[in-house]
Image 1 (cartoon, rainbow, N blue to C red):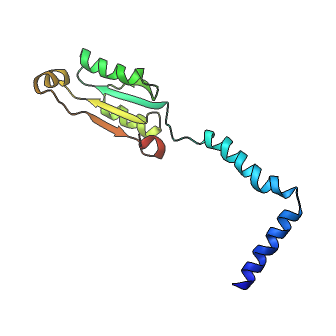
Image 2: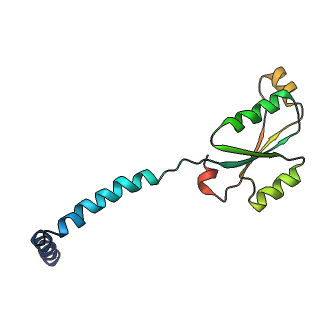
Image 3: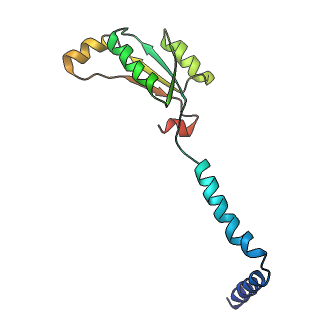
Length: 130
């Protein structure tokens, strides 16, 4: 324990003896903290978004338009089948798939709630967390 305290004491003497070391030790890390903290963000944008619209009604189109209006999603295409959508996701062309079921609008008006299918490509962990 005495050896460690001796080494720490020696290092502090060395640091304060050389005045050029003070900015390197204290100012540069603070400068890096200020600059790099603005560069590191976990905000995810431009998520490649595809959808399968099995309903083709104004309500389903309005739902897709809400995603299109968002700055987080790039709505790519309406896939005609689940097989094509899954293949596109496996290739990495799509990050999120939304499947709108048949009779979505009718069931929504009748029951006031409905289920949607969402498939997320979890290879990109930051995007999958959205």
